[in-house]
Amino acid sequence: MRSVAYMVLFSDMKKDIHPADYRQVIFEDVTSGKRFLIGSTISTEKTDKWEDKKEYPLVQIEISSASHPFYTGQSKTIDTAGRVEKFKTRLSKAKGKK
Image (tube, one colour):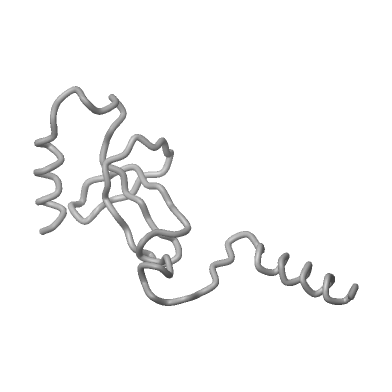
C-alpha cells in the first residue's frame, strides 16, 4: 500500500527540475536485509524486482537507518573488510611493546 502511494507522489513531481537519469532505485541494506525504493541518479548494473513486481536498479549498501545503532538503539560490530581484526592485531602489538 505504501509503495503505491509513493509512486503517485513520484509521478506528481515538478517537470524538468531533476536530472535525466533520475529514476526509482532499490537500496538494499545487506546487514539487515531491509530494502528501500527511493528516487536516485546513482548508476548500477544490478537489477531486482520490487513488491509491485516491477524491475528496478539495485544498489547494495552496508549500513542504513535499518541497521545503524543510532536508529536501532542496538550496538553491534559490523566488520565488512576485516577492519576490526586488523585493529585488534595492532592493539595487541602495541600493548606488547610497552
